[in-house]
Amino acid sequence: MTIRIGNGYDIHRLTPERKLILGGVEITHELGLLGHSDADVLTHAIMDAMLGALSLGDIGHYFPPTDPKWKGADSLLLLSQVNQLVLDRGWKIGNIDSVIVAERPKLKPHIEKMREKIAGVLQLEPNQVGVKATTNEKLDAVGREEGICAYAVVLLEK
Image (tube, rainbow, N blue to C red; front, top):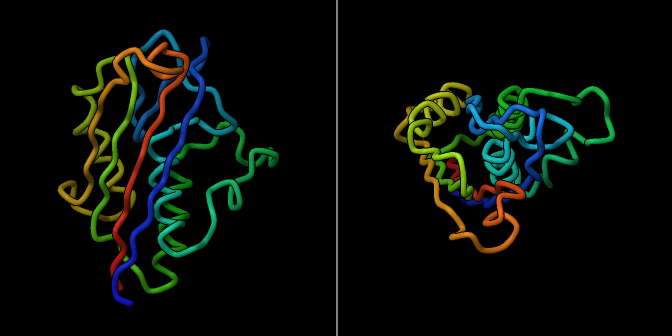
């Protein structure tokens, strides 16, 4: 097989006194995402998609929330480690497509920076990293601004 595809999903609760980091970009907002690491749902979804494409499990297997070593960890560093797992097996990323679901803040002004940061860590061109943002039209927990989630699909090539 010369191509593999994986999908990923992550969600974290919004809470006061935490930074909001998405795609490695710190975004000014009165709430941040709660998690053991920096809770970057976009980067987590991308990592799970990469691991899923190779049937390697999920990020909880490699970076368990019970391990104090990963407390407050920069998800871009974790992404780099997951990329190394992919490269070590002879695969490379063809492209990534992702979407962040959040009512607020508006993410459009930050999308290009997210693409650049993710591409830089993965040694890709920014045009290989798709990041979109949408809302849930005030429906469910994300729509009520209780959390933010992200979905990602990754194509790997041998």
